[in-house]
Image (cartoon, rainbow, N blue to C red; front, side):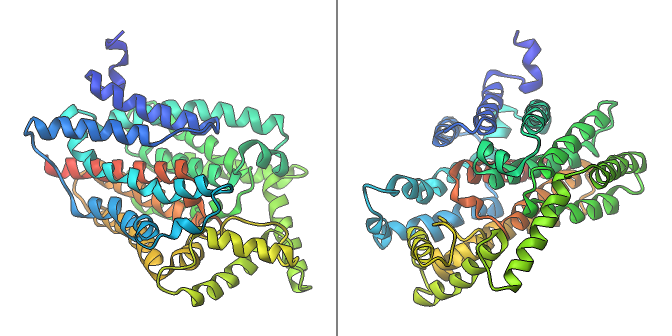
Length: 416
């Protein structure tokens, strides 16, 4: 039995690491509640064991900054300035405490290079786990989509919140697609196909913010692999072209329906009616500037944003009482002021700069991991222009974990 599971790790602890990733993702796939701090406790205990054994500790400044900055610029301010006390205890207190505390559980990701190195958890084990996840996901998501006729409203009810769900798995599909270009085996085309089919099904969900990364994906894949992987590029391009043609000719295409929805929103906005998806976002983004002016340094707090939206909803300016600004930058600006915004920018651009710096490595695996990581983070960044995914601890945890893992594998490879 142990031999049959060696693709997940060559020892028991490495297999345990694979198991934690599978649990983390499958709980999210089925939209079940999961206390992500269980995983962080396991990683902390692993690191403590290594530390006690006086083994080599591997630390990297960009990784440490990435894992710590949000705790210091977001979480800590709520305790230093007693900002949690303003949240009604009989209302959303627990939700907001989880949001505030979520960055504390990111800190153990600083230890991932040490943990992966000591227990022999390698890049191939990590991606083998991701293959299992996306192999299941492609079947599951297509079945659900077909059963619900790719109706946006039904999908939104099923996956609630659908936009964050789509962000995670569009980004994961892109990550695996990019990695397939590094593979030389005959199975690489199968992996590329599965990742593209997964990408397509989430495009059909109609979360338009997740589409913004696609031009960058095409450009970077072409620049990196037009000399060495022409066939795979043409193959991927052909599948994408077929997908677009099918959507262009079938009636009630989910993709083109979303374009029609945007045009309808635009027409209503021109008539000064903002009670629609696009119009509501414009109202909230403008309001974020007003809230920022009230508390420019530390913001009005995460609950203060929801409270303001409820006030606007009572006036009929917003259709409902939204909990956040549907934009990572405007949300941080309003809720956490300049300190929160600076922390967010550092948390996004630290890994982007790190991955970009590895584009020119002589090692092919490092270059591929760097491109995969860069596009993964960029996907979250661009999707965050229309959604505040950091409101959901499970999503936040997955983003930081995958990014920190990719950085860790590059760090370890550079040390070889």
